[in-house]
Image 1 (cartoon, rainbow, N blue to C red):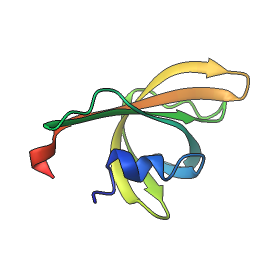
Image 2 (tube, rainbow, N blue to C red):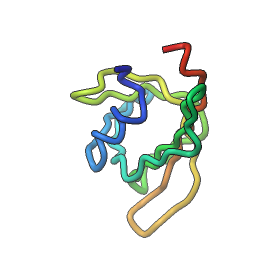
Image 3 (tube, rainbow, N blue to C red):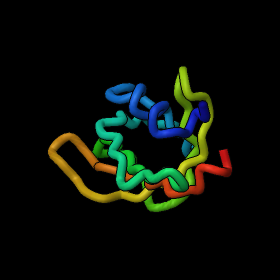
Image 4 (cartoon, rainbow, N blue to C red):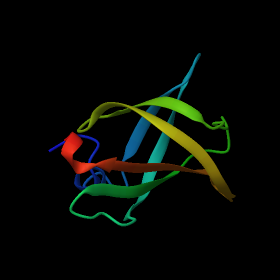
Length: 99
């Protein structure tokens, strides 16, 4: 099973991911893993992370580190804000044959 598969991320719900920034690091918590239309040919899902009020992560690719999933480069998009900080989304859509 791939480290970046839906089932891998679903198993990591409510755990912290260290995100490496240019001069520091921050932790994002995976709060949702949602299947958005996986079929026999394509795996499609979204991840929602909760982050602190600072630093703010602009839309770009970040290096995430997780104790079980290892290192992952994920294109991350800010999608909202709540009283605790910012919310970020990562979307996957890829052919299953690529696995």
